[in-house]
Length: 387
Image (cartoon, rainbow, N blue to C red):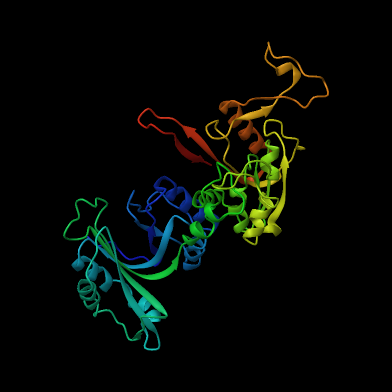
């Protein structure tokens, strides 16, 4: 059966990566822009095609100005499991909703998008010709049309078992594309200052979206490293601040992480990274500080805390200690000596992080962090974002 039409029915075309983070990102962004993801929203698990009810086209456009998990969004005019069901659905769509985009003074083109199957040009033309019953009165313009319409066909997820006919067919008016290009333009490979654990650009933007970061927010990273998470937040207009216990990392000193480069250059630092992307005006400061002993007055300072704590795998988990905490058998240092560095257990680290967030986040602020979880079914570690 074809799905009934709705004035606010939209089709999201999702990217097929970071599948576990797609739903939280879309939920967070809808909430940020005044929408709501209800329990009866139709999502299709690993499918790239999601049908959503969104209050307005403005919210849909704002959503696409932020998401890196979605490729495009369409105003859904029709949907069916066969061509006949699709055409029936389109005939039931209110004509008055079509007319503003099909009048004689407009230009348009129709695109065919298939998932998990490639069509010949002849097959694509055949599908376009079958839509001649729609009240198109404008002229076709393949280069710069005013309106773009798409037929999207879903042939399932198994590339080794592609069906003859699609599981679902959609037709809609293209509204906007997502921000997938940010993954390439902010790629760590092109970044001025990187480290062994610099966060992937795509995941950085996903975390900023989960944190509902917006213009003029203050975002803090207590384990700042080379500042990859600050860059993503600053891109969305937030002022950024961070701390790290490693003096050399904060100041960009020591051996380089980049291949064929022995030592870091004089201008390799977090501020230089922000400057590289034209975001230096959002840089507040980065301090050498121990996250286990935050030196903050009581108060709410941050709209979001977004961080990637060290897990002791590629970066050691350390904190400052005191003379009393030095293990027996280790010769005590003079009282004037800088406190020694001690192991910082994961459980203690996350306990401190949660307490710090509870004390310093503004009302409605979000904490977004990575938590390593080992499961016996996998050889490697699996990571999840908690908010």
